[in-house]
Amino acid sequence: MSELSAREIAGYIDHTLLAQNASREQIITICEEAKKYEFKSVCVNPLWVSTVSRELAESNVLTCSVIGFPLGTSTTATKVFETRTAVSDGADEIDMVIDVAAALRGDRDSLVNEIFAIAQAAHEGGAILKVIIETCLLTDEAKVLACEAAKAAGADFVKTSTGFSTGGATVEDVALMRQTVGPDLGVKASGGVRSVETARAMIAAGATRLGSSSGVAILEGEQSGSAY
Image (cartoon, rainbow, N blue to C red; front, side):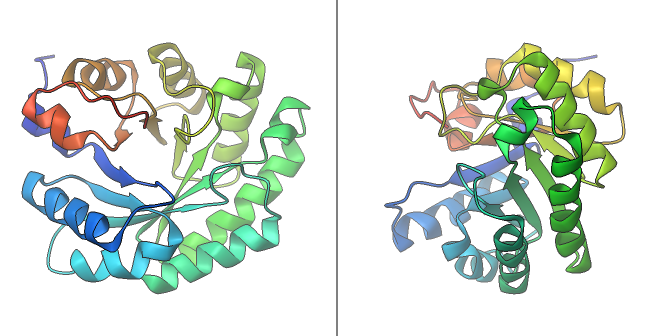
């Protein structure tokens, strides 16, 4: 397999701005960057979904919203409401955070029930669902459990990280997640993807999507200091 060019990697990137102090001007800027570099999506907090959807309306770039972010500790009903609102506002994709404690205690049924409810809400609105398992907080056993639950519940992707906890994506975690879900689900690597070399390594390990606020730096061959 030949090495992916920076331009080819652009199609894997969810161009991300999730800072709580993000301004409207910054949101507009990342939309313009996403259109220029042909990123896969722009990923923002629910507050900005309608703005992003309008800005991207004449492009092929998708609108992505996070849900239950960044802790995953909202109730299922709250996450379902957030999902339906985001989809109504124009989200094409939903990135939800699981109940991490449920994964750690091995409560597969709780995870499946929650993810199923949110997947149903997303799919009813024509959106796909990515499930953030927050790998840095989980044992390998819990990572496998969470990925299996996401697959059983009808999710479209599993995703490593929020980028707001104690660590981000690793090649080892991406490989484990890909091994667990098989070839049919997407795997999204997020947190710490800041260079073209790291992006290529994540894709080689099985990632089909990359979450990063450093998309421009990746494509321009620069090293970004961003945490996400």
